[in-house]
Structures are given as C-alpha cells and as structure tokens.
Image (cartoon, rainbow, N blue to C red; front, top):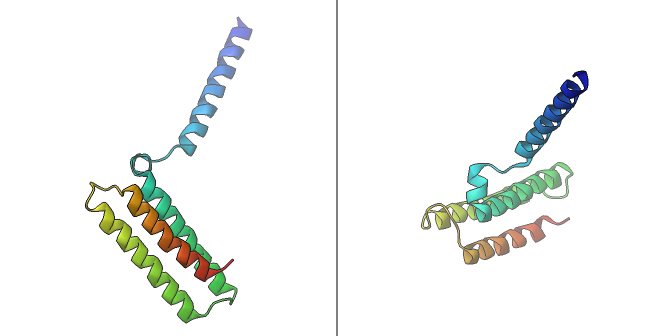
Amino acid sequence: MQWKRTLLTAAMATALSLGIAASASADTVWQSHHPRREEVNNRLNNLNHRIGVERAEGEISTRQARSMRAKDRTIRAQERFDASFSNGHITRAEQRALNQDENGLSRQIGR
C-alpha cells in the first residue's frame, strides 16, 4: 500500500511540474492571437535595448540615440495604425514593410 502512495505522489509531482513548465512557456492570449504584431514588437524592444547598449558603451552619441529612438517610435506608431484597420491584426504585407523599416534601423545601430 505504501508503494502505491509513493507512486501516486511521484506522478502528481511530475504532472504538476510539467504543468508549471508548460504554462511558463505559453504565450498570452494576446500573443497567440496577434503573432505578427508580437514579432514586430519583440524586434522593436530588441532594437530599443541595442540603442541603449550602444549609447552606454559610447559607440553612438546622445543625438544619434535620440534620432534612432524617434525612428523606433515611428515604426511602433505605424504598427498600431496598421492594426487599427484590421481588428487589431496586421497583414503579411504590413509586417513585411515594418520588418524592412526595422532592418534599416538595425543597420544604423550597428553590431
């Protein structure tokens, strides 16, 4: 009888740990319903971080960082504007255009 209880406890612990791991890696509802916007926004967050790192390392000036962040905000505004016409979604063509803008900003940052 003791071995059944031990087996049951081990099975429950395994199931619980798998459930916690699965929920930690799961997207939010918004992320799962807006994958294109999520990808664009993740890239923008990464670009913004890179601008901060480059500025902190002294590789770009304050003026350059300010200009790059303004371009970042422009891309974010365009993403929101595009989504406003499609019930919160962006089309593949809009994502492609936003990615091109992000690529240009990425080349300016360097690295």
